[in-house]
Length: 311
Image 1 (cartoon, rainbow, N blue to C red):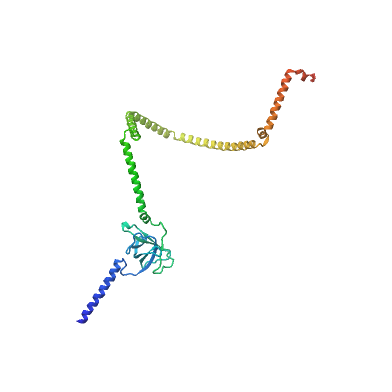
Image 2: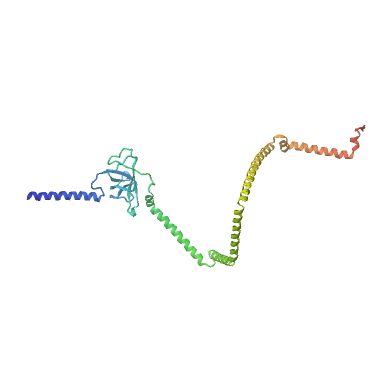
């Protein structure tokens, strides 16, 4: 009987210890019947991460956070977590604190390295993910700044609305006059449209009739139009060839003009050489003086001439 009581006490102790162990593992979100491997990461901002938060790979929970400690020596946060032993954590894996604390969704996201890399030993460090990878975390971090900007925008909007209300309440304000003018313009436009609605209806009917006639003509004269389009295309091709020839001629004229401007050739020297122009002008003046003197004194020039008999 004593042996039976001792056995019962021993079994009760064993069951109590088992319940305690399994309870602790359950509360810490550690798998009850499978082993885990522990790792750690060093981050600058925990973002509200606490023990028990999940560890995920591609959105699937594979473990949980076991400890979050601030280490003053390195001015950083050391986060320890456990991952199911069935998950291989190779070198090149990165860890990132993701989620928003206010929504209760803070977690660690693991981005596994290449499967061909050797596994990080249990207790080893997992590197941080590059900055800016999590948009939600960035939004959460900048939430106070965004709130201040939103408050400033709302304040400016309130001031603008107040000023607009004052302008609308003042009959002599430019805004009130502008609105009145727009209202008058809209009323006049509405009246005009109402008065001309019948006329606009007639115009639309005429347009519909014209479009119908044009469609009928297109159906009847389809071949002629095709020939006309072909002729027009040929004419456009000839015009394009003419334009190409004109471009070539223009390029040649530009080259000749450039040579003239540079003073090359007789024409270029004539245009660019001022001395040649002066000499030519002087020769013309001298010739003019000879002609004038010839008119006044023809005998002086004709006395040397002989009469030629023509047989």
